Amino acid sequence: MIISMEEYLKNPTSASSLSFYKTNNININKKIEIVDKVEDNTLNRYYFKLVHYLNNIKDIKLDDNYTFTNASIEEFNDHINSCYDDININIEDLMKYKNSIVYDKDLWIAIKDKRNNKIIGTIIASFDKDIKEGYIEWLQISKEYRNKGLAFVLVNELLKRLKGKAQFVTVSGDVNNPYHPLSLYQRCGFTDIRIFKIIGD
Image (tube, rainbow, N blue to C red; front, side, top):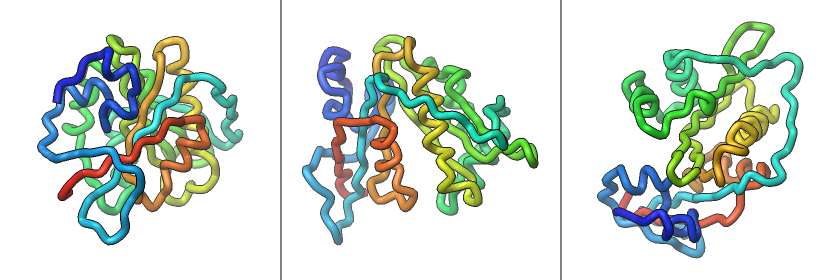
């Protein structure tokens, strides 16, 4: 599906379930439609999309036990895989992000526990210079470090890095994700929710 920049900018969450760049560069062979609610007992999958216009970003400080750090692609790969039981990515998958025109090294952020030198949180985002859109690709916290506010810190750090560069930031995700990313992003100031149903997924 090809969409114009003007059409996308009118309402980024309604125009497409994906970022502008992905909408125009990735071939999706599934039927996707906006719905008013999530239905139970269905074969369809439901995804949300939200937008943040980079206003009212919270100034959240990291606990003294943690620090933002640069991480290698191998460290990002290892951390992402350690956080999920049903997802397995590899270096080649992450290299596709790094080799794309929307790659921005400042939007690959990691948190390290200073006490054991271990990476315990990561976020990866893209930046489309043409439309000035930031887009969150990956966000994860190590299992033993969850429920400590670290995901909130990572998202807000990302928003701070995008302010003055992007006009807005979008994110999509699985409505039924057991870690409840939808509520996290809403607490971070993302709004204008749209729910998309993927038919027959």
